[in-house]
Length: 140
Image (cartoon, rainbow, N blue to C red; front, top):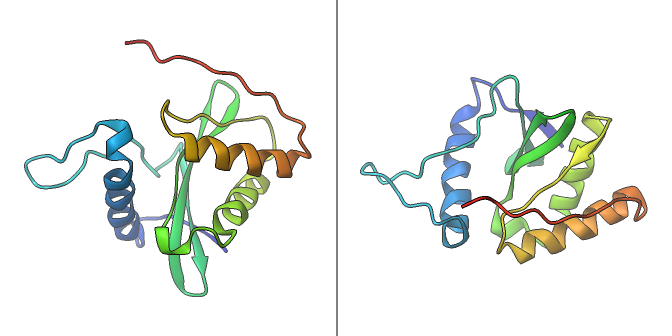
């Protein structure tokens, strides 16, 4: 079930975002700061929209949606490792897509093959394979 991230529950995002950054750091190259925390690049505040995914009363993931150049874009998406392979990521993605009808764009950082595989499968199922894919290179 989707639940909006807000001021009263944002402490959960703060913790999960650190877990996400730690797991993703070999690909992103991010390092912890002097306080032992990763810098968080995305924000759940307006104009972005942040969602938790809950299984019962437990928050097991989050997704941050941003509107960029006329497209909705998931700028962060995370499922706690113990809850993966249980269709939670797919269910959360579908619920987020349904909350924001209109054109979407999904991008992954180079080197994140598992994310690319996940999004191809999920988007393919959601759109009945009616999507286009392109590769862009980040400038140095």
